[in-house]
Every structure is written in structure tokens, then in C-alpha cells.
Image 1 (cartoon, rainbow, N blue to C red):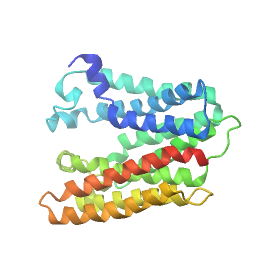
Image 2 (image 1 turned 90 degrees about the vertical axis):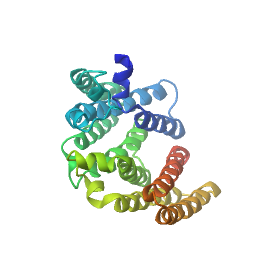
Image 3 (image 1 turned 135 degrees about the vertical axis):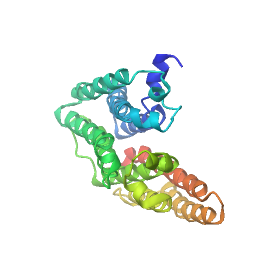
Length: 275
């Protein structure tokens, strides 16, 4: 693997890009135009790069012990020092890239980045591991809205929905790695709850995000909102039932959680039209 590609892989590009694109599309929905669109993309993207690179830099020793060949540092494809420097530069770039939108939006995004980095250390292996996800995800749409001309206040329902989505994403994201993490000393809240408890937590948080996005805005729910609610209410119990009957208990419920998470992301993006 070439070093530039290995460096990109160390940033956790898939979830980072997903969050960045979602916030950029939300920016379009709330009314950003012109230079602001790529500006939002770069500023939010910097937060995701910082969190991903710092995470891999901190986890390098643990990943080597676990034999994580999918991790570029553990595989020797890129040095830990290079990844650490990249993470540091990205973190410092966040307030610089957010500055053109004003002091308040820049402060919000900088705080979101700092809180997200607290997950990497020291909260990842504590009972409070979900808190950075709740706070940082809630602050991202707050940055997007306050970055508009006049710096309007973000609606509480949008911030709450994004926070719930972030919390649900934490439990869903950790599920595939529960065993490897526990074996190398990571004992965050999902590890303490176990697979079943984490699936329930993810389902409850994501369903809460769905209901908030549908019933939170100051207008009657649309047919799409009612459809999304019905889908979430049906998919999650079906996933749980299938998981209970199947030998591979996690798979069906994990897929149901991912489906509801995707529904929530779409609702979040299109909620910009009613902000």
C-alpha cells in the first residue's frame, strides 16, 4: 500500500466522508450558497480527519497487539509519527477553515472537534464513551446553521436529533469490534453493556432521532416523515426477532440498526428545508 493511500486509510475515510457529505448537504438545505458550500465541506472534513488520525495514532500499540492487518500503522504501511502529525495539523486547521463563517460558528466547530477528540482519549475506555458522540454530533448541525448570514440560532430539535443519531452510531459502529476491543483493554459503555445491550441502545437512540426529526419541526409531519417513522418502528422489531431466531444473533439486528441510521441521515439532510 502506497504511503499516501495508507495515510488516508488511517483517517477512517468512510464514516468521516459520510459525516462530511451529510453536513454539506444539510448546508445546502438550510440555504448556504456559493463559496460556503465547499467551505462547510472542508471545515467539517478537517474535524473528521483529525479525529480519525488521532484515533489510529493513539491505538497503534493496541492494534499491533491485536494483529490488525487492516490498520495501516499496525501493518507498517505508514509510520505512527506521520499519522500523529497529520491529526495534529487537521485539528489546528479546523478553526482556521471555520473562521470565514464568523467567530461563533468557528467556536462551535472547534469545541465539537475538541469534544470528539476526548473520545479518542481518555473517554474511549470509560462508561462515558458515548458522551463525545452525543455532544459532537449535536454541535455539527449547530455549526452549519449558525454559519449562515446573521448567525441564526439552530433549532433545538435539529441539535437533539443529531445528538441522538451520533449516540446511536457509537453503539452500532462498535458492535463488529466488541470482541477485539475487549481483548485489548477497551471497555467503553458498549463493551460494558455487551452485544445485546448495545443493539438495544443503538435502536432506542436511532428511533429517538427518527421521531425527533419527524415531529420536532414546527409543521405537521410529511408523508415521507410518517413513512420513515413506520419503517423504523417495523424494521427494528423485525431485526430483533430475526436476531433472536438466528444463530448469528448480532447480524440481523445490526443490519436493522444500519437501515434506521440511514433513514435518520436522510431525514437530517432534508430537515434543512424546514430550519
